[in-house]
Length: 331
Image (cartoon, rainbow, N blue to C red):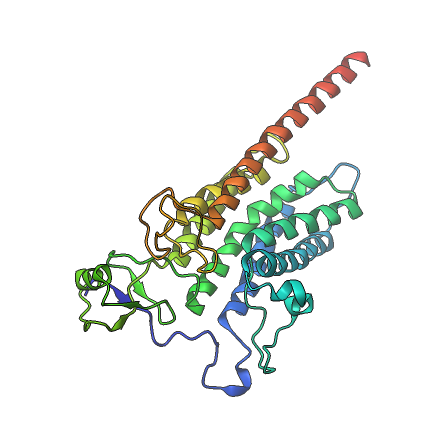
């Protein structure tokens, strides 16, 4: 058998056998861990002096309020972006109050299902800008510190997706391919499905529906977009040449990793490929590198934005340095 069954003991709920605690879910807990670890990383940089501003005293209360505003805007942006960009039903356009309504039509608690990373990035960026504007802090200096802290928190978010059995990848013959219980099933009356199932040791009858193994892409993302990117930025935090460098590196680095990992991740079924070499290509298979998803387009824009921030911030820092040298010579 060349695949792994998704562990049957994993449930979205923390205490699935206790009805009164059904609202407590692993995904929500992962958000608590994510924000907690991001705060600890930001606080570490505060103690190192990374948030010191000439003429202004920075306290731990400033760090708390900064990250709190960023989180609030992040959650709002993630939810709004998910419902308005990734949802194709149109119900949120006609009933916008449902965007933040955590119950289904029967009144059952569902939570806020559906959060977009790219929307969260836009919302969090706006929130940090608002905070810096209100408190008169240098925006790029503070976002550098925040962007260094974000990836380690992001790791927990993707682990939460794995525990929810969602955002799984495309089908694979790799021995670590995993059969997720809620994934789309395929009919073995289709030749390629029957051959694929046989190649991984699945015994199925003709015409049956089979759940094929998929890439655990949530864990790929947790590792590369979370741990690896965090280690890179953390190593560079004391060596940055100018403010804005780490912010640009974060955007470009995340966009780079996510762009390639999208080839393993399952695109949204209602969106499919935004650019496709073969319009009939199945989104469950990686048949061509020219089949581009919505996420890849957004990540490409992130890479460009990151490069633009680095270039722009570098030019700005050089001009400021030259201006100080000119003023010094005049004095």
